[in-house]
Amino acid sequence: MNQVTGQDFINAMSAVGAGIAMIAGVGPGIGQGYAAGAAAAAVGRNPGAKSDITSTMLLGQAVAETTGLYGFAVAIILMFVKPFK
Amino acid sequence: MGNGIVGASFHFMNTSAFATLLETTSDEQESSGSFMIQLLKEFKIGNTTLHITTTHVCLAIVTIVLMIFALVVNHKVKTTNEDEPPGVLLNIAEIIVEAVDNMVQGIMGTNANKFVNYIGTLFMFVLLCNISGLFGLRPPTADYGITLPLGVITFCLIQYNGMKVNKVNHFTDLFKPIWFLFPINLIGEFAVPLSLSLRLFGNVMSGTVLMGLIYGLLRPFSVAWPSVLHIYFDIFSGCIQAYVICMLTMVYITDKIGD
Image (cartoon, rainbow over all chains, first blue to last red; front, side, top):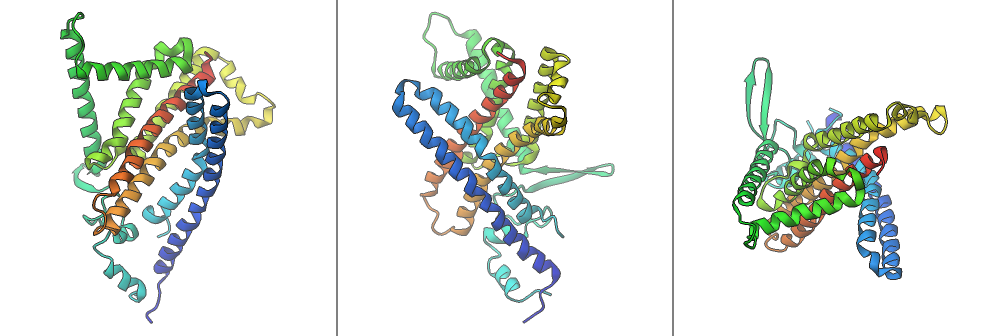
């Protein structure tokens, strides 16, 4: 077995860290699900306001998604930019 | 040297996208990784080195297509007789203009006329950038250098219009509930362009990375079914994100200047 250098260890840990960073995707999933459920209930109660409800839901979901995308940005930086050389 | 298991696996997967996923930096590019920004040409002016990447080329293509579309529609509008029924191109242009007008009118109310040009341009540019992945280009919005300027333009619009309408109140609002919340309010102001640009970048980039992985890793099997994923990642997600960035820009501006 050849020796593993420090750089190899850093690469491996970067990959592991990228995987851990993507756990951030759980939160937005739950939040978007709540928003979609509430929007479906609202459409059921008031079908006339469907377009307004849809645009409001999309806006809220897009804002809720931001935290997940921060996690994704961290993962992308760890994998491709490699800040720890 | 780490030539153990890691080195062997690197060698084994050298031709797949996985190698570029693990090894890509700006100077060791392989031709196989279709989802990272690739260096096409570089030349030196004085001491600075300029890089021409795929982002520049795709951005130029998108901009030229938009310009040609605008020029052709402009020519058609000027030459078409009012009594004749409009052609296909004019109908498409009318649909776009009407949709953008209604969208801006619904959010901004009386201020719509001032911003409808910028919002329309932003919408068409981002939409075309996002769906350019369908035509084999790398979407320019999957580069943070394209989305950050869009966020900064929105930030400048918000601050300029806020100062113009609210005068001194624009700055005293930062101390609003209690004075010691000033740092948090200041961070909130500067988080707007960051979150706007990161949202667009992250969404388009995640689609690009996933499509690149599917085409690279599953190359023998990726025959026809990735088109379903293209519908989701390029068309659906691209349209939603173009809509969302326009909506959020309008909402942030309206928040400052009122209806």
